[in-house]
Amino acid sequence: MRGKFITFEGGEGAGKSTQVTRLADRLRVRGIEVVTTREPGGSPGAEAMRMLLLEGVVKPLGPTAETMIFAAARDDHVHTVIEPALARGAWVICDRFIDSTRVYQGALGNVDRRIIRALERVTIADAMPNLTFVLDVPVEVGLARVKGRGEASDRFESEDTEFHIQLREAFRDVVQAEPERCVLIDASQQADAVTARIWLAVTERLLKDRVARTAPRAAS
Ligand code: TYD
Image (cartoon, rainbow, N blue to C red; front, side, top):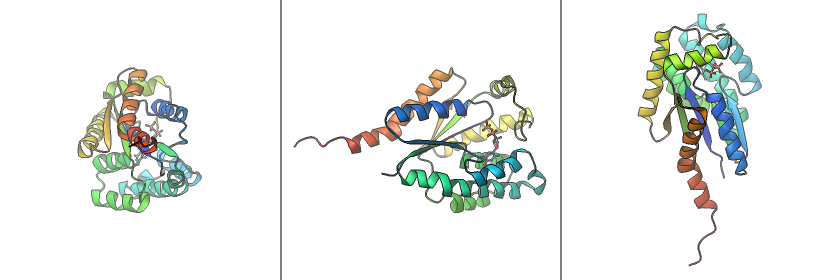
């Protein structure tokens, strides 16, 4: 049986990486093979492109070219890591995916939506996420968390506060537009509460199905 594909999205400091690890652990306890990965990057070729993207080397080429580099990285990642894992029945959890492009390059970068959708068709083929969590935090909370981690800010984290406000709105719009795939999670709660909320959605939306299909038939 083909595996399930789960993505995590959201602004800075939403706590995605913690939740990716926790969800993977819970699924593994149930005997499911899980591959965790991230974008931009996730495969050797895409990691090379990640450096160019996050260090701002690509920015001077303009938003459309930047979108294409994100797409090129995604193409390699999908074809060498994500698709083979799903095909062998593993579940894949990815930190950022197509919705980051829709939001950062599309909604905020003003790249034409038709270009973004066309690149999606080429790069992801059948690897559309089954479930996407959008971790939502007030901008001040997210930025304070990033500062608290003491990380050097990358090209996107150093944008101004107004940018982050628009970012949050754009991610909320993504959930509204595709409620059958996306779940908005209040990530300002304690990490344990966020984990519990995510687990509930995975159980309801993905695991029920699996249990029903693998359960022995009742005697008639
Ligand atoms: P990263 O350090 O992985 O940040 P985070 O911890 O916030 O996930 O940096 C990824 C950055 O790249 C992030 O600011 C969002 C941006 N990005 C895009 O602009 N478009 C994309 O398609 C992807 C995948 C990421």
